[in-house]
Each structure stands twice: as structure tokens, then as C-alpha cells.
Length: 88
Image (cartoon, rainbow, N blue to C red; front, side, top):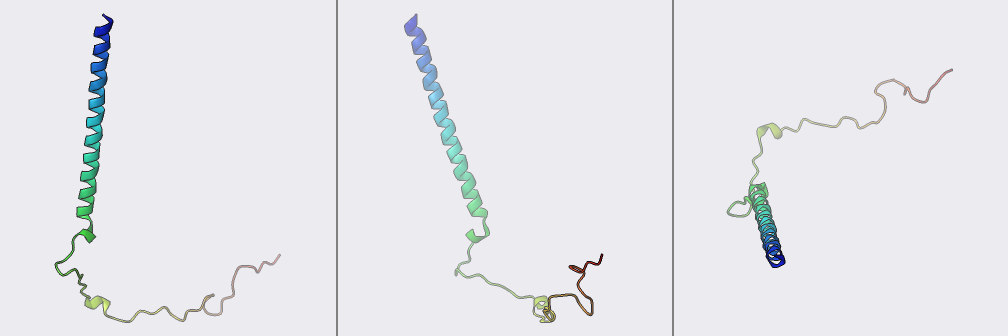
């Protein structure tokens, strides 16, 4: 009776080991599939035939009417700063 029980436990252990191995292989294959899909969908993965990229400039961007102003840091006009002047 003891030999039969021992062989059944061995059989179950072998099945569990095989199931764990199969789950690990499926997880590895799934991870590889996700990594391949992510790489294929990345914009840098799609290159042109000559290896260069082209950029077309729109007429909206060609105007040069933007400036940063005078560049002064402080209140505008004749305003005095409101911090540090406390009257009690």
C-alpha cells in the first residue's frame, strides 16, 4: 500500500513540475510577443529606404513675428513691489 501511495505522489509531483514548466514557457513566449509588438509599433522602428527623415515646414511656422519683449524682470511701469514693505 505504501508503494502505491508513493508512486501516486511521485506522479502528481511530476505533473506539477511539468505544469510549472509549461506555465513558465508560456509566460516567456507572451513576454517576448509583447516586446516584439512594442518594438514594431514604435515610430523609430519604421525607417525610410534611404535612412533619412524628411521634414516639411508649414507656412504658418515661417513667420518671424514672435519676440520675448524687453527681458526685464520686475514690475511693469511705475509700480513698486508689494513684498517686503510692511507698515504697522
